[in-house]
Image 1 (cartoon, rainbow, N blue to C red):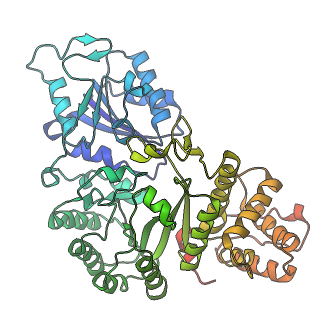
Image 2: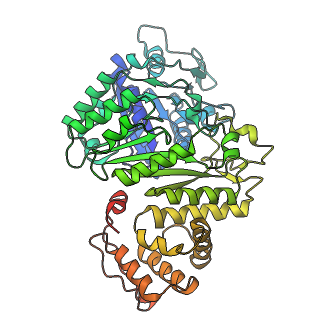
Amino acid sequence: MPDIVLATLNAKYIHASFGLRYLMANLGELQDRARIAEFVINQQPLEIVEAILSHQPRIVGFGVYIWNVEQTTEVVALLKRICPDLIIILGGPEVSYETEGQDIVALANHVITGEADVKFADVCRGLLRDTDPPVCEASEGRQACLPHIIAAELPPLTQLASPYELYTDEDLKNRVIYVEASRGCPFTCEFCLSSLDIPVRAFPTEAFLASMQRLLDRGATQFKFVDRTFNLHLPTSSAILQFFLDRWREGLFLHFEMVPDRLPEQLRGLIRQFPAGAVQFEVGIQTFDESTSKNISRRQNLDRLADNFRFLREETGVHIHADLIVGLPGEGIESFGRGFDRLVRLGPQEIQIGILKRLRGTPIVRHDEEYRMIYAPHAPYEILSTREIPFADMQRMRRFARYWDIIANSGHFTATLKLLWQNAASPFAEFLRFSDWLHTTLRRTHQIALHVIAQVLFDYLTEERGIDHELTASTLEADWHRTPSREALNLRGRKDAQKSAVLRAARRQSRHTQPV
């Protein structure tokens, strides 16, 4: 039985925990005495507890994040109730800041703040050292020989053991494979934890690419880079792109987060060579409003950003996933709408509309009083209202974001979307109008079947917008049949006859790459 269990609750099964694999890789001689146990947040807590205790561990280390802290707190409470002597060690961004007052922190024996790749192993060695006297005297449920809160020093990246060999064949086949060539971010955006990680630190390029080669040799095809600014250091970015170009094969897919206003010709020449749909860039714009940008200490050159979008859309097959945030200090709905319209004109395949979250440790709290920023008290700590956006309007924007995701970002209705705002000055205003109508009609934002979306789009466009029935039906049907294996869509018949089943949708991104 292992002495150590490394555990976390992932948002979905496909999300393999990168952090646990780093901890395992850097356990050194303790690696043979440890196991990784991954779960998902919708599993029953008692099932998770049973699985962990079946290993009979002495130590359980949990990775705690904004998306799993509520469920993990329940699991830790159950573990402590059933097995009070079990040593619980917490780590991760959710418990690395503002630890005072957190229920899960109070339950744990130790909390390691910061990058725990090396520190976790050091703490476990101290707790498991066989030659010492008894590990520790218990004191109020904690181990008295170690502090409750343990700050981890930044580990030199050159000394970290690689985690990539710990991806199993099952992981490579069925899960997202996370990789990183660097850590940290050069920017100081006040809503983001990455702004606290200055300066940017890079892994040695040669060793990193050697790890990528081993993954390729094992059959890996999908690589999601978690670097916050992939295109910051041009020699490294160029080397990585060239590496994958030289080893290109059908099915290879690369995801990068990029600085939107930094794309020199050195990178453009390489990007042009990738097949359509093979590369995805996640582009964090967040706001186009200058005063809001100043409030959150964000810097970006909007003219260069626009030129880079033009290049990517006109000269490459890159899939662009662009981010905007609702609820930033000082930005109202009108300002957000102007930015949204500007982004629509730039033509990214997906626009991810995020609702501002108050991440622990971020300096955005300095605006709370002036801009009357009110956040939910529980994870994920989303903004409820601001001076510019009262609660009722924030709810409208939540619905807007949800409907946009299932209608626009899904890629199911690419051509039909254009009918929504044809001959209109503002796509934002038209989609907000549709969103309000849709909520009044359906009274829900989740569990909406695809054929229902098609029908309500038809009804809205023909009855509310007055668009020709035949044009609307033919456009919707063309969108519907861009995805194979769909049953017939009969929009011209009675509403209660539109119970067509969707057998299986193609991947979201592939829908964006198909001709309209």
